[in-house]
Length: 247
Length: 120
Image 1 (cartoon, rainbow over the protein chains, first blue to last red):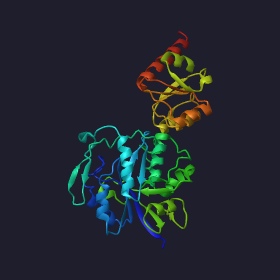
Image 2 (image 1 turned 90 degrees about the vertical axis):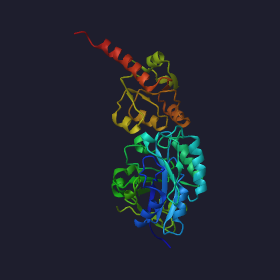
Image 3 (image 1 turned 45 degrees about the vertical axis):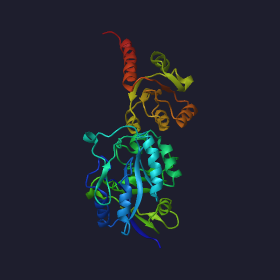
Image 4 (image 1 turned 90 degrees about the horizontal axis):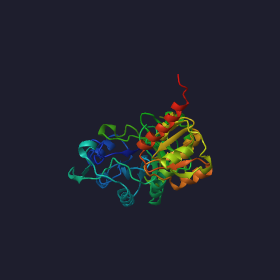
């Protein structure tokens, strides 16, 4: 049966150097449930070590967590990769780490903390997660698709690290599954602002780096279940699935 | 001042637009954010960038740039080169940094301008 799902598909954890330390798996899950979100995706910058703990905490709770990552391409375009299965995300992670140079400087960029489901610090990620991979955007999208994931352009309305800021425009052949709009812009405004992108599905998400921001941006989607296949149908407006755009 | 003189003086590699090196260079622009380049560069600019995505060809074409110089040893991505050859847009390359390339080209263009200003 089709029903409405509240989806915030772009949430960071304390693994991202720019995210708040309070964004550890338990607080993230509790806040997402309080905000009545039905589906979320955990997307840290170029990394994913906290995803498994969020997945563990979501078991038996009224919420679906998609394993995800916000990858920075060679062009410094941020793109979300979403999967059903953690193992596919880990495969992408291997590729990303092979192409991500540098070491983090905590004093400059912030700590990159791995926190487990019992709120214990497992360790720190030492890589330069704030940096960019040397994977060209098109290759990155192809890798995500080859692993069965969805590729979504991050915050296209933002003046930094978005495909529009970095590459000026979106070639209609760029095989993104959807484009993400910030909460501040909203869907209706985005459709007015980007008539040339009418062929793409838009989703709105929070890109939360702080607990208070979880669910501040979300998309209501009409789906049968919370998974990648259903999302793809909604992005393509098929079989009765769609994304509401009235806000 | 045409592209050919700049190619010669800086020892640039030429990837495409081989028959367009006579194109007059009026000014220059540097930038890797294509949104910025689209907004602020001008017709006749030679554009120095480290961005190699194929959208650079569309931007140079849209803005009527004299040509594109890829700096810091960058080479055009495969689809970028194909597009540049198809659309006959001059794409050149140098091992110089963006700073060094822009500085040298600025001096060449400035000499030329100074030489054309009639003495008071």
